[in-house]
Image 1 (cartoon, rainbow, N blue to C red):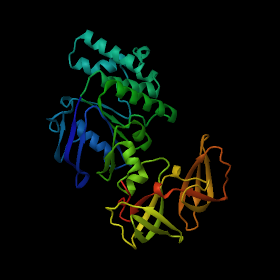
Image 2: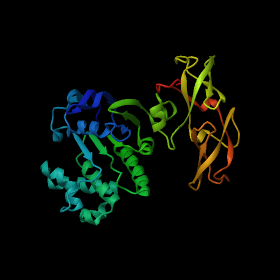
Image 3: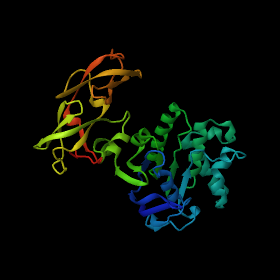
Length: 363
């Protein structure tokens, strides 16, 4: 399929620059997810690829061909929007075939493509219905089908699942991943939901304030975040951060004194600028914590809230120095609000971050 290359892209609205010198290389047949908080520029970047916004400077190539000066219809892309964007007066069949009819394809070709795509998406029995007669999930399938029949070089998805309920979102995530595996298409998917990013992507692009923070596979970004922002944004629940100060460092082990006075010995990268007196944060995932007092380190705190989700439970804990952490335990753990608990963990599962946000951990 296609190879998408973004070179030094800059976009401004008036005097406000919202995309800052972004360069990306997206491989053929990958499902790439742009993820980040609201206002980070992910949808604007997608619209620049689609041709719905124009670059102030920079370049965009698809499959080696420069496309940033072309109208959207000539770029070889198809876009699926958050609000479905179906024609209400047309049937499902007419909606899916509309682009092919505009391109003046033969009737037999159009019919074959629509029915083949409807079969893939399991919406054949809906072809005669109007959009108002469909559920949200069915409408989204139709919107995706309308994109598939055009056989674009690149599929663009702008938060396509955000209007669906939680159960249907999970189902549609699985279906989109299955569809990608079947079509082996190049897809770029925008979401603010890091769970969608982790479960669907071959490659994740984490954005913040119009710039790229990190690019990598889901597990690479989860296990080896480049900075505190990425570490806190990727993962659900978010990573815990314990503030402290380095009081000693030796043999790639930093001794960190927490605000409450407790000391922890945390490994760090040999290339990191780790110095005595530096303010740092120790990051640790909720699933790396245990109430069974196992591991080579422990901290204590009082449970102020318990969130039971059936097979798992989240404990929200106040530490003596005022910091708060989240602990992931099994669903049958008999703990309640107000209990003081000891929390064990392995320091090898901790990550160290400088006060400027940079990761100091072993990569």
